[in-house]
Amino acid sequence: MVREVFYATPNELKEAIEEKYGPMITDKYKVWWPLFEKVPLKEGINRGQAFELTMITLDHFESTFITDEEDIDENYFQDFLDKMNSFLNMIRYGIQQ
View 1: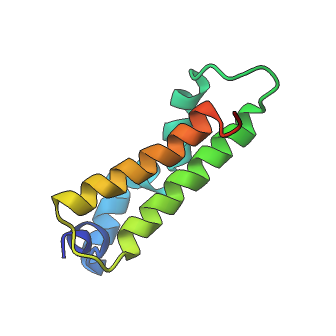
View 2 (view 1 turned 135 degrees about the vertical axis):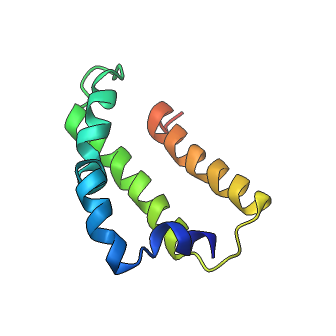
View 3 (view 1 turned 90 degrees about the vertical axis):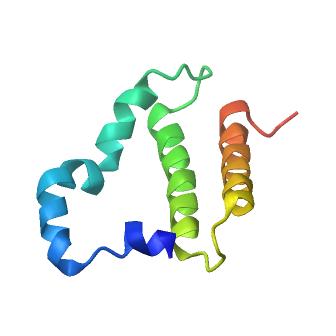
């Protein structure tokens, strides 16, 4: 039910939200990119590809959160964040020993 409040926006509100927050909501990459540009990368890493991989991961977790049928409680939310951070740490630090 909590997700429905945030993600099942009534049609009559969508236009007002789009007008006020549209650029940020519809093009979140423009918001994230300036932050990502400040991240130091290992030599030889293509910044655009690294950004795309990070955004694919974040989009996956956003989609999972929206569509997951489980009830959200403190344990679910903590497990979800722990798993997302684990994936992001694999991107950040690598997976090869």
